[in-house]
Image (cartoon, rainbow, N blue to C red; front, side, top):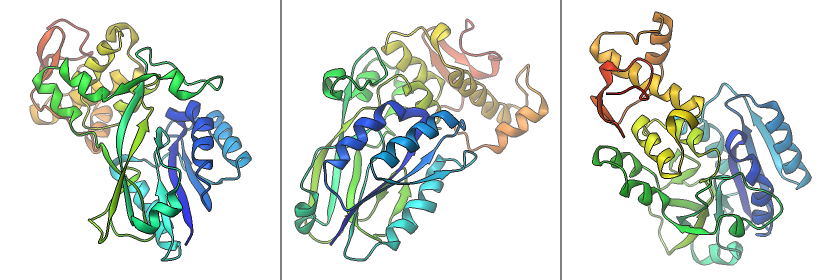
Amino acid sequence: MNVHFASLVCVDFDLDLIPHWIKHYNSFGLDSYKVWLHSPSDNKRNLLLACTAFLNAGWAIEEVDSNRTFAVGALRRELLWPYSCSLPKDDFLVIADSDEFQVLKDYRERLKEFPTIRGQLIDRWDKSLHVANLSSDLHDQYPLVGEVWQEVVNVSPEGTAKEFHRVEKNKVCAFPAGSPGDYNGSHVLIPELPGNELRIPVEHFTWRSTIIDRMCGKWYFGPAALWYVMEYFGMDPNKDAPPSFWKRVEEHEAVQAKSKGWIPGDWTQEDYDRAMASDVQVADPNVMHTPRGVVDVGSITTGISQDS
């Protein structure tokens, strides 16, 4: 039996982690490594740097068109599922997102006993949300351990907390090639397989400088949730929020406008139609919560920085 590694990597978010990630999974001594590289922003520099790093490490790579999206798992189903099915039936596939570091080295021996290996995410972080560097070990750079989502939930209002509970913590890490499942996210949600199942820790280094941009790409995080994450990490959302946050606010307004029959003040009909054609969804259909109180989304035209 052979054990293969495959993943989809968004170079917009995890370029700083890639050297550490390659070194970590190369230490597993698996039989092959393949990644699909994707940049939604069409960042040619990041793509080139990532390609160079993976090729120098001996990994197979493919580049995915920037106009294709990771949303709702469609791209992953198009790529990971056929690749899994193309492998010999006695082989296994290991998968991990580019901010996840599985804590298991003897995969080959363990898979003889456990046909499915699942992981529990354990956040590694530092409250400064800094960029990872190459000069020191990631554990030294991100010394705090715990479930950051829960920490944020503890300081969020009840109406916002439910958005954080959508985060999947139980991930499939390895499974028999060709196993059926829903390829949503980079992890295969397969039914329980016969035989034993092993669960391992997975260190999760997502809490870095790109976290707000990353969260803005997930439909279940509304502006309120994003606002509280920024406040939790000591940011002033009115001053420090990235452009992706204000775009998310506009999307939030547009979705609500659909049911209210109006167009946000400075939007053209084209802006409105484009927003309506997207798959943006909002956790709270009527209001959003800000540190300034509850704001009726129908009154918002420029973002949550205005007073209620």
